[in-house]
Image 1 (cartoon, rainbow, N blue to C red):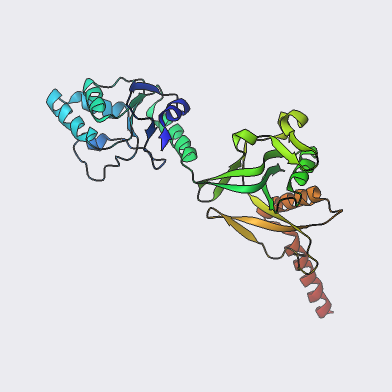
Image 2: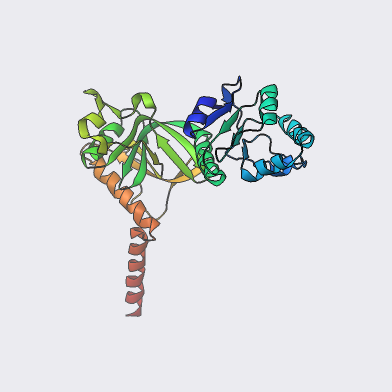
Length: 307
């Protein structure tokens, strides 16, 4: 469900025919141009989508005689459509207004051409309707890579993030990260508005990163491209030494690279996180240091056997 005021505000719409509804029952980021429905073919009518009227649909309706136009619109408005949007600054027909009021369906108007409205509306609906989840952690932009830091409370996530901010990287969210799935392969993270730009440092309390380090130290939202899980060092646990095999975690059905980073006194986590982000960038370009070392060792072994 999308609030009417949010829909109108986000897409700069004019309310041409109000309704008693405060929300619109829109379930997907898809729109429908009902030209074929106005012609009488109602099979596969996507009535659950916002109905967008452009120049072609309006011209066709105006070409009909009064009786035929009223009959077609009566059939059209009998379906539970969420709303109608009329593009190009055109005004609704009188029959539209009468039937919309009778069925309590709002009509909005925009000065945009139909194609531009489609693009903007789909982008807005994709964002507004994206599945969402909340993760306990810290989200940072490190060298352009969205790094999600997770781990038990008190392990040092905020301290590592603070050091990264001092080194010129940007904070997106601390403690609580709201994540939404904008498509099948992309996650976007941001901070809840009430705690945006704030960070908790144990022993000091709450600090405001934007006020302390400037607007360049914070970011509103960022793609989640890597997860780094911080855990206290366990002597008995074998940690990754070579990086020959990649590990992944899944968030809302999206698989992203994950690193388990052991924490112990004296280890500079910020530098290690920077290295992890740079290393991911190199892997995306097709270069893996572990694979390159393996190739060189094999070449040495082959050369030794040949001698």
